[in-house]
Figure 1 (cartoon, rainbow, N blue to C red):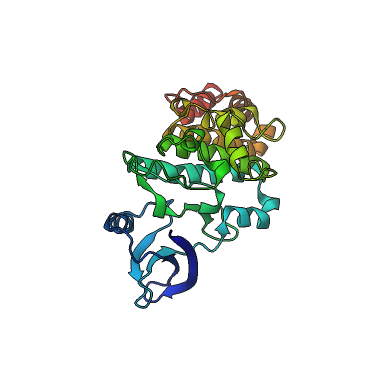
Figure 2: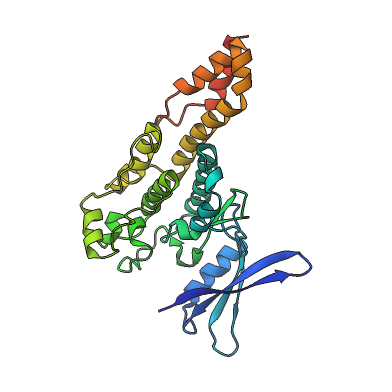
Amino acid sequence: MISLIILKKYARYGQNREVALKCLYNSENITDEFLNEIKAYSMNIFGNILPIYGISQNPDTKDYIMVLGYAKGGNFNYWVNNNNNNFNWLNKMKILCNIIKGLKEIHQNQMVHRDFHTGNILFQSKTLNYTYISDMGLCGRADDVNNHNNIYGVMPYVAPEVLKGKPYTQAADIYSFGMIMYFVATGKQPFANSKHDHYLALNICKGGRPELNEPEAPECYIDLMKKCLDSNPDNRLKAAEIEELLKLYYYSYKYDEVYDEFYKKSPAGSSFKIYINKYKITDDMSVDFCSLIEESSDQND
């Protein structure tokens, strides 16, 4: 079995870039297929994915070492503990938009992450809310079902169909994102008071989900989370669809905040704010939110 651990942080002189080294212990007999996947990731660095610059090998132990980008802000759990006072809904929506954008990039390249949870979401700095998705080592092709008997990840984030022995799919990643949405809303890990054992697995397979109610989160947010956590993977939304919905939600918060003074002083601004608050997020991806804002503003000119 391969175990992973970060060894040390290094600076790449000449490019002024810090990197992290991750050793894959007991990996001397690793397959060529796995190495080729790592090489492929190193040549295709996406914006919201932690960069993999390359791979090396310990000359003594023959263990392989991955050279990764270094995220100063740590993982999501660490970041929330240090930024709890600023973790308002505007920042929550911005972070989720970053995360789902990264997942969309993975899925658009016909890949499945397979180990998607808050521990694998890293922050660029200790204060900024720009995120990377990490631990691409388990990531595989969406059409690869050879490893369907192996279950990876943190149990509360593993989709019920995977716990039942079915292959990891992009829909399974979406289920994991739904659990991330729960963490974002509450600051708590899903099923935090449950042991990660066969009883929890059985509960998840029978439809058990962590409870989230108003006023912990707005109704439309809860509805979106529930769609991600649907027991039927065919009913879950695609990453691109979720990104569009979260953008609508983010901008509704942003414009409420930015136009607060405009709202107080201008009749047009008042109508503008009411219009945004009236807008209900739906599954209709054909709606152009920016155009709706422009139309609302034009009607008040």
